[in-house]
Length: 262
Length: 256
Image (cartoon, rainbow over all chains, first blue to last red; front, side, top):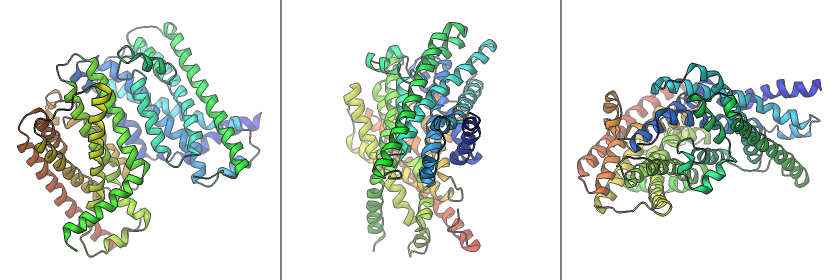
């Protein structure tokens, strides 16, 4: 139990710091802190140009949706990066229990993703002069954390696939693009075709964005607990799927000697 | 070998290499389509009198810029990683001329973006593809590609000292989308943004493409776009000379 806890917390943080090379300020600040502000401004002004919704609508949608960048890329690098470091075989031949090994790397990704989204939300509100009620700040932070958890689950699926494909950056960008369109970040779900809004129910961020908008409009956290429960469920399903995918690829790679095949 | 033939052969080689890369080729065509799709939905759901054609043209040029911004910034650095930078620097041609086909190749991928976005808008959203002045439209696209290549060249030689040059190139993707009038008219932006937009060739390239498609007068915008592109190339040559002189003095050409 103690060994598993150490692998989960210490090993997870160590691997995150070692493999997520975007943590250097020269990459982190422009990519994680400044870029989301420009995305928020871009869509807020597109919304003004198109005469759709309010700045607050685009602020909340894009701030939460941008958490997909750290959640997808960091998770892929924290696991897929082992392949490029030629340490993957050492990891998988070790007797370390797999659940803390893989999920331990998810915890820093969740916290980092939540930080990025929270920063974008509050800095974006200052830039656009959107007033978020003081009573909504703590609930919004909580929703951001749940959103980051949910997307990190999807990130685990992405990370598993990164062990089998050569350029994970393209896949990560594609997933980012689908989340941008489907989750209601920039287009109200009612204005999307039915099949798209239905598909969105199974994607990270959809329920969290809706909950965050309601909370920003004055709703209590308790009143959006259903949405948050759905978001947690989505994240858990993706997380379990990602873990099973990792174990399956591990089994396949042992069978076919294809562990680090690109 | 004449200069024109040199650029043509180099461009073709670079273009082929780019199209083989999942990130620089397919990825750079697909990624902007997501933003274009979002923009189409936003404009369709909105109440503005601006038509979807306006959004379609703007989204198409967004894609053109996307294919240049991230990858051009690290064009010179990639040569360093591949171990070919020293060979290119010692080639008898000026280094800026050697590097220009690389950014031109990336900008040429933008034509794929333009066509893909317009066709996507046509078949997925029913946005009509009518171009009032086809010749001027074609010339505007070519001028925009050349100007983007010039700006990409300036990025490539300016960012070479940064280890993560791709970050700087990537950093300029959203701001150019926002302030160069692709989907947001300049009139909606704060006044202090306007002079910044005026010195960016994408602003005038976008205007030229839009004017020629919708039946305006694209020539002044086209000439401004080309003029600014020329300024970028001249600036890139000056920066190149400075960077290489410094690298020769310090013996740091191959160092990151």
